[in-house]
Length: 474
Ligand SMILES: O=C(O)CCC(=O)C(=O)O
Ligand SMILES: [Fe+2]
Image 1 (spheres, rainbow, N blue to C red):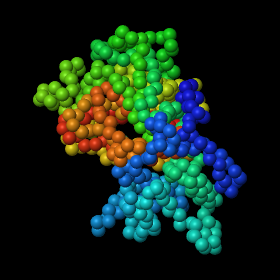
Image 2 (cartoon, rainbow, N blue to C red):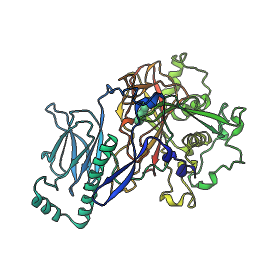
Image 3 (cartoon, rainbow, N blue to C red):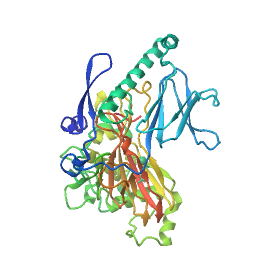
Image 4 (cartoon, protein in one colour):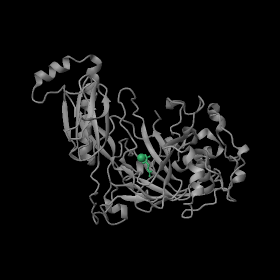
């Protein structure tokens, strides 16, 4: 069980003990505190200054502390109508990535014209509360509101008051807003350390790294019901291992690109054969294209491709042995048991409360010239009461399938550094993977994991997302 026990949480210098009191006596919380930026350069403490990112974006989370459903709108402030963001259920939350001075408001579910509350986004605040129960300075009115709640509603409200209280302590201690709902467990899956730029973690994987394409007859879909039968013991051959390199292992190097957010690059994670296979599966493209980056702008290629492409196509792990192998390799990379990334038998991880994979299917994304994906978070905001474990996206593995001629970088506009106000732009390289975490080691969501796909300026871009959830996928 590597994923539950392999978190070197206790030695992580970014994790510190916060003591606080919410009226129940002193309590401890192991909080993520962003280290001094100097340490990201292995430089003496205090010798470097953190640059203020040029990108002004910020998370915006809205918590409905009422027993009524409300509608959340963004106000474009151009005289036009508000644009609906989401519906906030009683005592639940939602949000989006936003910018300073942007305005949001909530209305009753039944009446979109009546504005109940309005906010202007003002970083570093990221969490905004709609609380019609507590009337500041009026205990009597507050008491009347509380009296009108059912026992269950009162309990939900009380938990939100605690959450808001905790968030204050957390902000004072860490300088960050708490974007989960207190209490939330810390991630149960491993987070690689990212102590300084260029730090490397070396991981070997025994899973096949395909350098030659199997015959199509050798590939077949895998049954989702096989569960434990899919375990490959150490003394068993890997899948279709006759198509691997001479080497019995593949060495994968995770290199730290960014310490906050934690982002890593892994060159040659996918082989050219595997990239070709994915393109064949998802776009109907010919196998064994003899193309390299740069010489592939001919019309022939355009014909072989476009027919079956769409903006996003999902490829399941069970599609065939090559895709299954890519998941097994990704599991090794993340130091998460591959069993967690597929449907499990009853006796595998019985305590997890879920038999489902924590990984999503691979999502293929295609960008044409001018297309982009503006800065966003991969995590969302969990419902506190309908899903108490607060499952959320945890790690993203980006797999680059080609190289646009110009543009198309993945950008982390808010990475912490001491050199530039510009974002960190990662260039797509065929077969390269980028891993980053949307969660911090203390169970908070990482606002700094904000990222964008910059516009493709010339050529096109093909990429796959592999999303892994914590603690379960919901
Ligand atoms: O295309 C990229 O580089 C990033 C894609 C992304 O962030 C997403 O699809 O969520
Ligand atoms: Fe994303």
